[in-house]
Length: 303
Image (cartoon, one colour):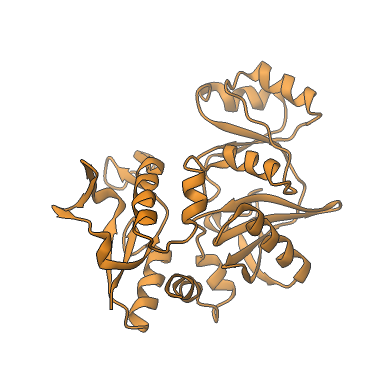
């Protein structure tokens, strides 16, 4: 039996750990490679002096292609963030050439720079109901204010860094003064701008191979306006067939095998917040302990 290749940050990350547990349970051999260990040289990929031979594998599982390096011990604020879009793209091209299954392979090859900005463009292209979003090539406050008037968007204004995730690098400006303060040192940062949607929570639907695994409702902890589980948000199970069908349709339109679809439920209908290609599922499994997300991903890869 051929092995399955796992590429991740480390084996303690929840998604990777759960996938390894699923492999061991099903007695499937695997090899684990760290994102931070790769060396690219003359069309070859090496890790710790070993050349990666994709012919040894039957499928590939990739966790989030990024990692942090802490410059000093116990200094959480003093770190460098590495985002590996280019490395992922080169790896995916080789995986496709070897005809190996991997979740969202073709989607990520088509969209190598997938982030919150390009995601908003895809939503528009695919006619997906989403939060109105604009992006500027220059985050000059006067240009942001002009754009708000042009598109009839009012304060509060939500500002998100395009390559942010898990609720990080997201700000809310209540007025022009706060906007200027937030943008003070972000002139050259890729950002998106959205109107703030009043809510008492949002919803995440996990989709694997066109099927919904369930809906997790998220609500912000006291004193916080972001609903993310990673930021201490509370999570609850939710049942709504129409919402699940909406999320499945979003993934079908985008051509995705696996995704975490985040949704607001508004008076005018569902609005997509974002679609996560490498969706973490720790909070989801807390809400649905009987659902083994890694097993569903493994079944998709091995079938």
